[in-house]
Every structure is written in structure tokens, then in C-alpha cells.
Image (tube, rainbow, N blue to C red; front, side, top):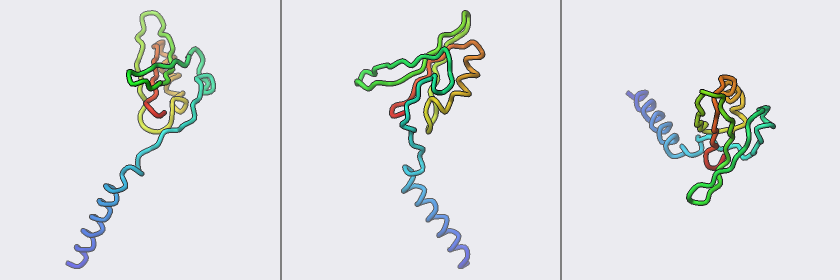
Length: 106
């Protein structure tokens, strides 16, 4: 029974630590702002969009080939647009256009 108390106690400590320090476990953005050309992408331009609250958001845009869609792409957490260059290349190789919008703070 003594061992069971230890196991439950350790489990509770691990759970509480995860809960209390969850913000420290979240990925933080890479502050470096690379141009599409620095990431090895051609035919992609950087555009700036202003949100209603005045915040400037940076996006990369590439025009679609005729009869192909343009995809709106938001990356997940961590990194920045340049770290997604291989995926962007595959999308562009398919002929699709792309509006790759960086999240706030990226």
C-alpha cells in the first residue's frame, strides 16, 4: 500500500507541474524575419496586411497557375515562414497559389 501512495503522489506532482508550468512548455516564435528569397523560394513576394486593430501582419504570396486554386495557409506553433519552405515549394510545384500568413508575433 505504501508503494501505491508513492506512485499516486509522484503522478499528482507531475500533473501539477504540467499544469502550473504549461506556458513554459509552449513553443515560442522565431523572431527572425526572412524574405522568401532567403528561404530559397522564387516567385513568392512578401506582402504586409494591416488588421483592423492596426497590427501589421506579414504574408508571403505566390500567384496560382490558370485553373488552380490559391491556398490560404497558417503555420502551426514555433518556427517561422522560412522554416516551412520545403512544404511551400511542394505546394507551388503543384501549380497552386499561396497566401502564407504568419500568425501574430511570428
